[in-house]
Amino acid sequence: MPLPHLQSPSTIASALILINLFSFIAFGFDKARAEAGEWRVQEATLLWLALLGGSPGAFLGRRVFRHKTRKQPFVARLWTIAFVQVLALGGWIGWSLGG
Image (cartoon, rainbow, N blue to C red; front, side, top):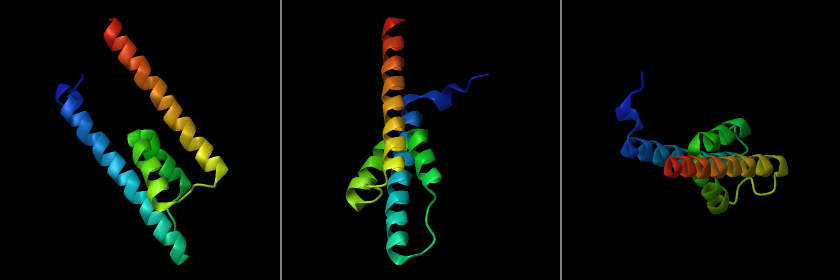
């Protein structure tokens, strides 16, 4: 049984804002921990945040904090996530307009 109130545009927008904010903060936190030589946020966690809709926050965090910019496997995975999200968004928009 769908829950319509969870699918409202304002709820979805709020969730995306929160996940992007959390993703951005996670990149800043990880950068600070890396510079201090302390425990780090796992790359898998950063990628999951991006996959859950936080890829804009992840890219902004990479740029602002200059973090994870040269780790090629990580960068490739992040770009792959963003590419798949853009394809999915395009497909959703096309499906919505077409039918």
